[in-house]
Structures are given as C-alpha cells and as structure tokens.
Length: 219
Image 1 (cartoon, rainbow, N blue to C red):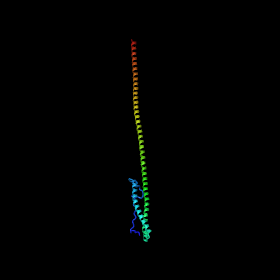
Image 2: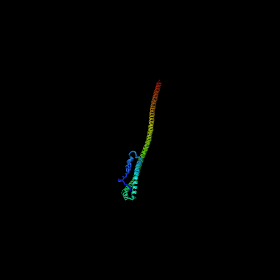
Image 3: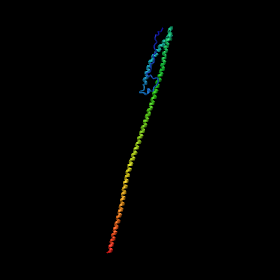
Image 4: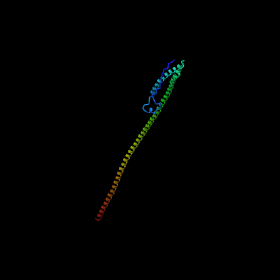
C-alpha cells in the first residue's frame, strides 16, 4: 500500500516575467535608453526553466504515484488515486499547459515590443532624414544667397567704378569746354580790339595825310 501524505504538495505558481507590461508601450521606446531585450529575455527564460523543471518533477511524481495506486489491488489506494492523486496530476498538467500558453504570450509580447521599437526607430530615422534634407536645403540656399550677394556686390562695384569714371570724364569735358569757351571769347575780344585799333590807326593816318595835303596846298 502506498502512503499518501495528509497534506498535498502545493502547486508552484508561475513566476512573473521581468517585464510586467502585457502590451507594448510607446513609453518604453521613447523614454531614455531602450530596454535590453537580450538580457530581459534571458532572465525570463531562466525563471521559466526553473519553474518548468520544478513543475515537471512534481507532475512526474504525481502521475507515477497516481498510476501506481490506480493499478493497486487495494481498493483504498485506487480510491485515493482517483480522489487525490489524479486531481493533483491534472493540476500540474494544467500548469504545464498554462506555461506553454504563457511562453507563447511572452514571445508575442516580445515580438510586439520589438516591432514597436522598430517602428519608433523608423519614425525617428525619417525625422532625422527630414532634418538632414532640410539642413542640406538651407546650406544650398545659403550658398546660392552668398553667390547672389557676391554677384550683386560685384555689379555694384562695377557700377560704382563706371560712375566714377563717367563723372571724371564729364568733369574733364566740362573743364575742356570751359577752357574752349574762354579761348573763343578771348579770341573774339582780340579780334574786336584788333579791328578797332586798325580802324583808329587808319583814321589817324587819313587825318594826317589830309592836314599835310592842306598845308601843302596853302603853301
């Protein structure tokens, strides 16, 4: 006859994963350094392995005990097998099934978090690309503005030099014209005075000749 303890072994509860979140959260990707999923996954797997080995060991013992007592020739052993050992083995079996489901859920959570982080990183990369493109565009505009400003300055300098040369030429022409006017006026004055002096001299000469003729006639 197999002896069954008065108190049943408590079914171990499954340890909670290190990450308590059941759904991916943007906060995990936005705030600070992203979580180290490799370390987090290893920590969860180690905990699950310990729990699984303990659960499997208890299930194996309970099932072996159940089958032994179930096949016993003693009625009380068979009754205990159905009343105590079978529910206990089924409970361990249920825990193993739940563990499998939790493993699948954990993988899905990790996958969702990784996808969420990937999408978030892609958005940030797009933002960075946009900023880089804007920076390139601003640099190009600044370069074009610098070239345009230099061209305007060169044009202004050329215009300024041309204006100064034109002013100098205008002043030279003006001075030449003034000098020419002065020469023409002087020449005119010279001609006027020269004609006047010639006429006066001729008149004087005629008067002298007339007087001389008169004197000569009287004599």
